[in-house]
Length: 407
Image 1: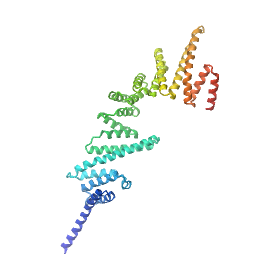
Image 2: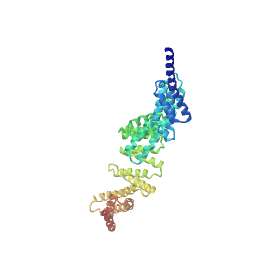
Image 3: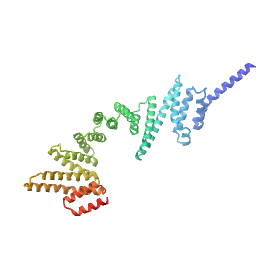
Image 4: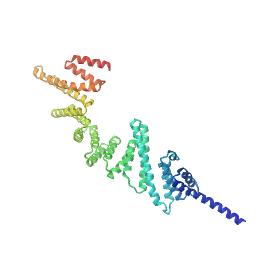
């Protein structure tokens, strides 16, 4: 009697163990049938039971079921578990850990890139969402979303690496998302990796150099990185212009002008470049430490550059205003010299006065154009009032005074 009871109890235990293993089999069948809700239910039971929790097969199929849930277009299935993508990855890693005999090695290696791709797509979706927030000027939401994007791309790279795939493109997207998220150390680390791996994008040099300049305050490192990038990509306009911005910020006038002249040859239809050239020559004109010859040469070159900018973009306020100011300052500098002449030098004074008036006449159309483009700019109106007064246009003075009172 005792023996019969023992056998009966043994059969119950064996039957219970078999029923738990059958949960794995049921999950497999449901998965093949596309019934992912039932497959999830069965595999979750198997993953919690002591008889199947240490079986690599359980975790392999759990990873397979969960990634298919995540990738399913049916929202109801996708929402069965909001964290399906992470649980899938963890399940595959658990299967690999428990698979001491290597029974599932090849299957796991084949499936992991699917999970990596899902993380990559998740990162891309978050990145696009972050760009939308950026366009809306919602900085907080943008940074939060770019951080999420960066994390997803990092996970994708981790999975690709675990699968033996060396995917430099994912490293690149980690660096871009990290930079936009404000994680400059992580961005810099990945950009350095990409430079060392000779990743074929000039933007890795511009991004790295910009981080060195803006966030590390390392001008030398920034310029050496720009130099390296420009040696590799001499025709890349963006790299050239970003290097030029550093030259401009550091008051490296000659270097900036060399770059701007190259930029003008590379992009002959960009009014902003010609305005920047004019503005830089304008600085030389105003620099009294320069020789008279250098300042005269710079004056002529500034005029040409501003005119070219306006030719390309007639409604461009900045070169119109600057050209007017350039002529006004030229006239003022001539009058300053004339006023220092002796009283007996009447002829010389009259000649210089006429020359100055000629420059004032030249400035009027430009300042009037600037005023037309921005009728509320008071600096333009005050300049016009002064010029109208000096050249004797009383009606224009009256008109501009009325506008100043209105504004």
